[in-house]
Length: 217
Image (cartoon, rainbow, N blue to C red; front, side, top):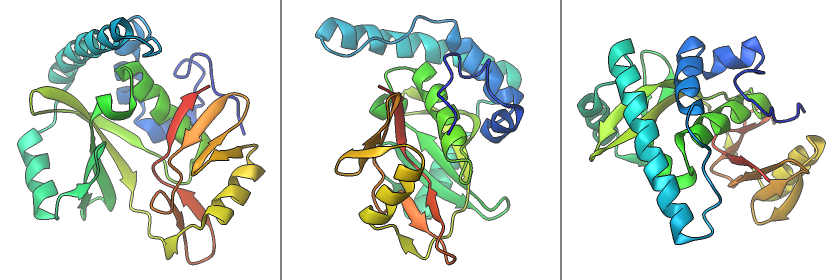
């Protein structure tokens, strides 16, 4: 597997960048790349720093999205999500779009990310390590007083969820060992949350990772 890039967008292969959303992804990632990095949340001051940072990043992204036409219709997303049974969890609200055959996700940045920069880095790392089910940045929406990211992904049809032993074997071929539960690591990255709902087995026995949590160690 490729090493995680030190400057993910600048060193991103063209095919991976296209999976992530192409120039739309590059432009949005460049905006947040101009802000200071988040810090490890090991104190109240660090948590406050990261919260303030996300607000500043979101304000800049909103300006870009309005100017570029990527501030999406939040009410329409909410309607379609509710009509399909309010699928998703704490991080993502999800609906299926029949016209494109893709699953659309409204992502709460603050659930798993310290900053918007980390959100874009995770999206890129997903497409580098799991190109079989790439995530594509579509834009942003306003929801409940904050800015959320919007992603889409090909609709992955699995026969069942993967057993932990199957996922562990698959990750071992990619150089990762299981740390505990459904969490894996190598010398560079942690890849977590690979439970049976996030790793699907297709009819031909292929394992597809659809929604991992990835971050540098």
